Image (cartoon, one colour):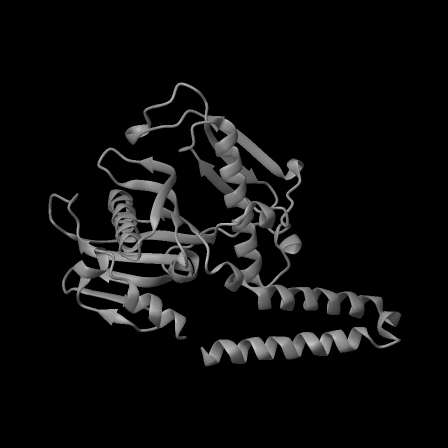
Length: 297
């Protein structure tokens, strides 16, 4: 708590220093320098408001399977189950947004909203690459496999907050398709599923669980706005600047947490060094050891 106060005080001092520079009569004599000061001030103000202002609200979570084939898709299923159980322990609700399942119950990707007070504040630091080491249930030789999945946690904006992030229609590529079930079979005869790509950054979002095309489009746009906001926050840039930059490809291997089931049992967070040998409890939704450790950094 004291660290948070110190950070906020430090940011406020930097903001006041820049505002004092702007008050000088010769501030606009050097236009390039003045513009840089304005940009820096905007970034600092956004950083001060930060994702902290959304901590009490809902979260949108996406899990994407990475390197590891069917094992990685099964790992995505395990992580989804883990977060559902964690949400249940907190008394929160889960609302499915989009899922792309394989034939064995794993997920190529899945997106869902976690509805409950403090959902985003608790889950936001789960964002990153997660690694699983275990004897593969899909390997006839019973060999040990390593697989990866990416977890992305975004704030759920209110309708009023969404208006602050305006995205030109010309920057969007919108595709409609039928909602699909396991193995890609179409479960909806109408094209209600929506995929939106933000062309300048390459950011892509899906929504397929709403009944109408329009509702899925609204849901996808809301998630896209949150993605752009998160990208801007991480890059310490303004939202407008961040929307102009190409998105970098996901690189597997920079894991934030490892789940080892063989040759020993251990879950370890590589940012905080928090760890436990009770893997079963973690996969059953006991995440407080890691979430609290991250908050105390």
